[in-house]
Image 1 (cartoon, rainbow, N blue to C red):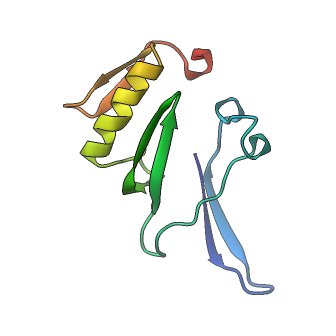
Image 2: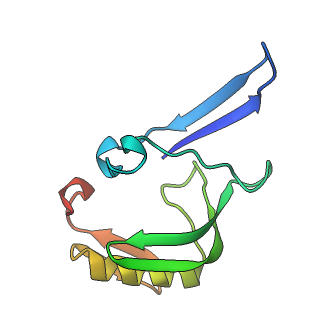
Length: 116
């Protein structure tokens, strides 16, 4: 995940801060020509974006909810009810994943680059 913070975009006084990077192998080459997508946060004071559709294989998860992004954490936070839907879709679509809804974690025993 790469986070960009733009502090001022006025002429001759623009600045930005970038955190992290991205894995080119994890981006679908048919989506957006294989390039990362930029999302605008919900407000200047929150590191969250609104989402209404997630797709894992053939499973679609619909609803409106906020996804919280925190560059200080190694994961993306979603509400418990959304996690339950995501973990169910991931477990059924990706055989290498095992999920524990009570702990809100999913793990794989192999590298993500090896998952079909």
